[in-house]
Image (cartoon, rainbow, N blue to C red):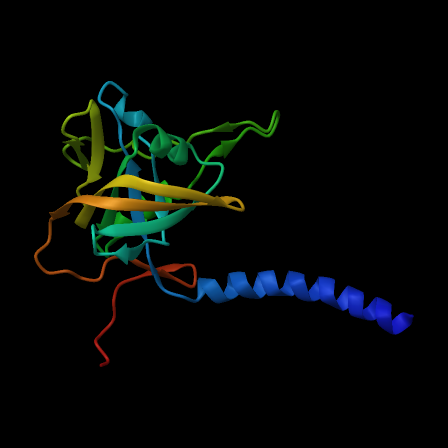
Length: 205
């Protein structure tokens, strides 16, 4: 009886340890720190533009059309904007201090009111100046605009292809509609690993 209880207790502890080990393991994997901005109607005040930092973007397919995928955690005001408009931009940031500030600002998430446990959105564009820090991209045939960060090497203009909810996350699939190139010589972008920001190192092979 004592042994059986120990085994049951051990299983529960092992599951908890696995989650912690998984979190620790994933933090040691280098990923791109990229900023996603959601389209808004042109009449929306720019300080209310939505966006967030993602590190899960991957190429999904090339044919019959180029697709990318990423995930985001719920609840998310940016997710609500994505569902509403269906268009977004993903920024490959330059590996510099400006990009680090942007990545940190866009990763703050929703603000929780401790009194009634309600959520309100952060405003990462509130302190950004149009034409100095970002420009607006008009989506043809719509009344939508996309804020594009100027401190980017590449910007992927995307339209929602599909979205799935799994647990407390959504997996988004986006179709590439346009690619804006700001830098002729790519640097590898802004990397995030072990809870720190990095730039691409020297070639080893």
